[in-house]
Image 1 (cartoon, helix red, strand yellow):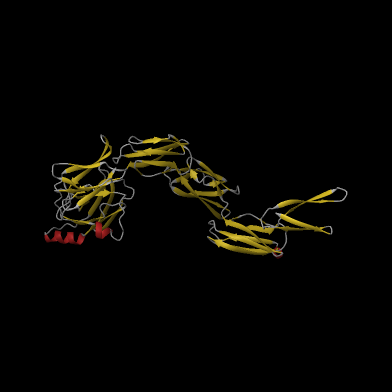
Image 2 (tube, one colour):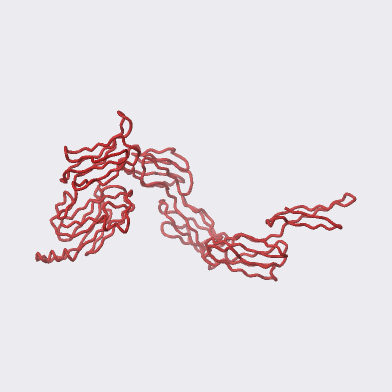
Length: 470
């Protein structure tokens, strides 16, 4: 906003606020009615708010000399130089250009003018997300040498533009690189992927990471609505741990995500006669808990609306079930979880394991949510073999199978610690087989993967390991 006063045929104009790009029309009307107009504007810093390579130039709109400085720099640094007695300023950002910011200040005739600037590479132009073949160019229009990280392919490695395609569409990220005039420009790109929970309990919302609309579908055991749009809500009508797939179709491609219905009842399925197991219903409140199995094997110690504590009166491998009755009688919905009366003992492996080999293994934590460790005391094993005049030296083959017998993890070793990352395995029971290269029968250990369990790393070995000595 401008203010002015007139005296003796002169006009003095002031600015109430230092705001850039203010303008006005000044009109002088003479006694004969003739008027003359002049357009005026505030003094401001002229130049780009983006500092790219090789830098950016600045000057005051009045073209007057000024004292220039940089303040409030964050996220990186800039350099400043002046020329033409302070009329011009030049700012360069220190590589890498990572979005660092600063305030450019010019002081002229007692007034201070400021301008916010940001460092960025005006380099590769194109979509951040690849949901089909996408086109990319360099902002200068010049020819470039192109390359891209694994998971993506290029239509050409040189030229003014290139097309990029994702090898798979699972949300993987990569880097597109263009070299122009000896300067390297990069752009982060991401393949189309589905955002949403891996565990559905009882429903979850899913969308594409690109924010684009798609046609949605799910595999049997699940329902979804709507079937088209930016997002969809997937529901598991029954919570029994079933696996499934969410599918989004657009631009001739199908993007998928593996999901699992959360078991309605969580808890370790092996119930020992020297302890108690607590089971939790994760989908609401329970009207009544019931435990099934052979007469007298399982009993309920205590229960409330969400949990039940169960004890086994034997450990002979009998099967049973924890049952949650949900709803209002007599219209109950029934949820079940299978349980087994069993607890591994020193001197034996899991029920059904017929191995007669002598082995020394420590398996922890079990249950686990992310990592599984198997410690093998090869020295003690070898000493035991030599005491029996055996000449073979054990070589261990450690394998992890799912319930369908599919081999998921495997590592061979002569001893020490074997580590399996189980972060991406779905909730359920898995089977650890340890072969020693001497006996053709493995030691078998049941492993529960339950991502609802959070185990302190400091306590993982002390509190959660199970020693099996066969």
